Length: 183
Image (cartoon, rainbow, N blue to C red; front, side, top):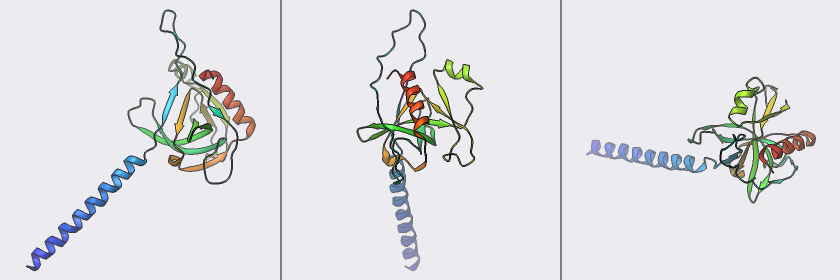
């Protein structure tokens, strides 16, 4: 009888662990940020289909506040899916440029120098601009902002503030993104 009690106790603990693991996995799956992006199309060749209509201009503002919440003008960290849209991606810095309702609008950053492969990037419709270095990169590397892909982020999925970009660089990036995306 004592052995059966021990087996029952072990099985009860295993069941409890499985329930907790299932709850944790479900929470992790639900907490993965929903990110939608709208890459602009590459220049079209003669005789190809006409371009899509220009997207509506986002509600752009500059207003960083040191309040622990993501604000336009700040570089924050968020999950960004890869272009393939297959569910893979990575945590990366994002410049918040504005809002659309309750959602944040942003442009992703990279420390990779895309000037070295500019022709390949252009062939894939990707456009970048340099913003230099800042406190958002702990190693002080120079950064570039991707202009052709507007990210839509749920504020609850942003993990931390990196730094505020100065107003001049912010407005330059927004103007360049507007030219590239047609808004």
